[in-house]
Image 1 (tube, rainbow, N blue to C red):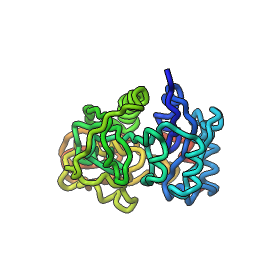
Image 2: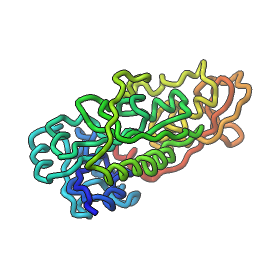
Image 3: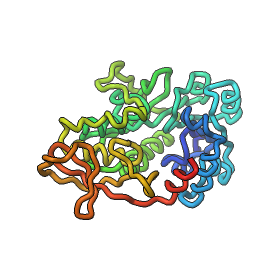
Image 4: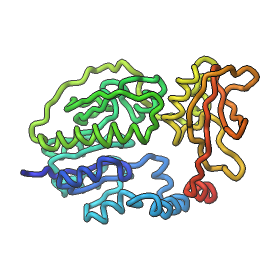
Length: 314
């Protein structure tokens, strides 16, 4: 059976990379990164990050993965320019497969492959178009999510739909566990299904208007303002904090010798909270917790050597 010649565009060694390497002929890998990361590519901190990652990951970077597997690698730091265009043309891919990309790919690139370019998006399009659908699903406490494999066009997640699948969002599920299900299981399955039928992929035109807001990224200055401590119940806040545990700074971060560490969101308890200040961190009877209008959310510290080193060199 003929295996499609594909180029993968992604950020880091994402959950799609190794499965696609087994089921397709990967002729190139493109690393796309955020503007913030591009600006710091050669910084001392990033050098430390790469050094530390050796002890925490199988591969230190997507470039390392590509080198070890003898796959041509391209770092996309200047958008869809002519250098990238020529690099892609030289690889003569049947298909480009995208998952996690910080900018829109332009037509001079996505039209190169004979069978075009497809993208895996972690929402049930046209819902939550944009770079951060999971945050907004947690924010809105959605009970149902979806995964969409679609063609790329000039819009943001507006291309024709190839395959979709729905799933239930368990209350309080953390993002790595959700990622394992949504991308590692459902998403990979949809891409592999597409690769088996890449010459005759179905097309379903999307509805132009989405029923949800654009799933934009969250600015750092917004972190402390996103949670409505006065009006949201403890379960809603707990669900959001669990889902954004790795990055959202909605509660006061650890200080002192624990500076640079993060809180682990444990269980919650509905109870009377009179006399406590909302969103503040307290410690009583050996337990840390933050306070909501109708209960406590218990938190704990899990020491990370990696975070300690990164905080020290910043």
